[in-house]
Image (cartoon, rainbow, N blue to C red; front, side, top):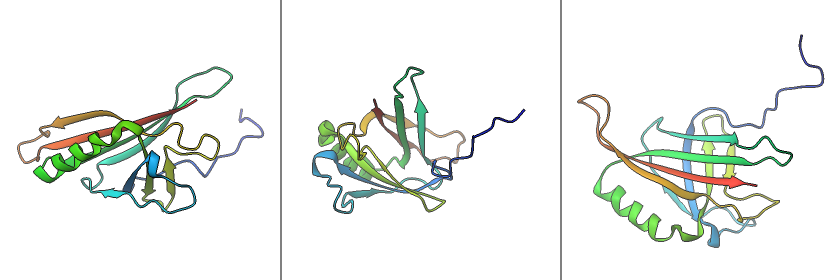
Length: 144
């Protein structure tokens, strides 16, 4: 039996991540375009998820942005710079394959009060002998 009054919401993210631009939350202004640095990740190796983590009366949403970066000296240098300025968190402009653009770590309601923060940096060897090593960067924020 179908539920009445329900319809699909077309504003949810769909498709893969095409590009990511990060700006320190302290430098972000809603009136200007994101001028942060664009991160080059491996093709088809980035994703964005939203997860409801509380069943209570007030929704709490965890937003996670994960990128697999080539494990090179350039990437290591960029990650060191990122970690040095990570104290205040980040706002990300995420472009999906569907053409949608998401602003993660900022909302009209909360501003940049809940920015993305570095949750994990991991190094992976790959799955098969032909794979190149990768650095996996995970950023998260929780909207309360």
